[in-house]
Image: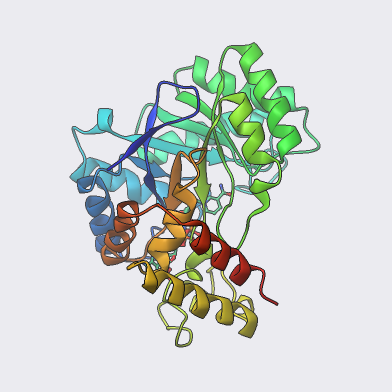
Length: 319
Ligand code: NDP
């Protein structure tokens, strides 16, 4: 495994981290969850990413991870970076959503109970809340760190300008922002406009989510929609409607480019993100150990020639 420094911090994160958004909930097969996590840790993936609402049902991914931590990773807590988040809807009433100090503080306590640990390594504000003063949300992250319930503070899905302000506030509070977690893939490049420059200037690390566009940037949908795929599941966030003719055309073309590089499409899509040194870690999801093992091979070739990059950009811009 390659470990990259997370921004200007002392923390190293694996180039590939594992996310537990899909496939680790109460409705999923527990032994498969266990096997993916064991495969990850054995391959040097030290970082596991959670959020309060991951499941379904919400909270169950944290519970499952806690069980596996106890049964399979007991004794390895000091080799693990465990993160969780609060910011999306979690419970009824005015205190279970968005970015108030009340919500974040209560939610972190609940997460710690579900996972069965005393502290998380990274606690995130899951999304920017335009109706709560940023000072309050960042103050809640700082409070979590000062209480010893989190070691580092992170933000996710924050636009560039709010990221800059959040970083300034956190620095003043003495809890510098460790990491930003934005969506970034060949199919979704919004971070390139401004955000990557801001986090670089601010000394914040970057861990990018949905690097495979939830499975689109793999061989999963080349021949239709498999019944066990995310797009086929009623609770999956990838919708069948997103697999359009135009998208399939691009996927097929990208797949051909990947073959010329001796990579699978998934491997090329991950390598393409890792080529940017501002990307600390690529946060992948997986529904099997096999998928994860394939993805881990991406690190073997993260070099892209000028010609390859041009063909890729032309493909992505194809009408
Ligand atoms: P990906 O884009 O990596 O999609 C993962 C899916 O791609 C898998 O479930 C699987 O689909 C498919 N896949 C993975 N590897 C392969 C392979 N080698 N061959 C074929 N198919 C493959 O990431 P996610 O969307 O799952 O997000 C990753 C993590 O990012 C989350 O778990 C979470 O931790 C974080 N995240 C954070 C968000 C935030 O707001 N901060 C929002 C979303 C995610 P299938 O299940 O169909 O087999």
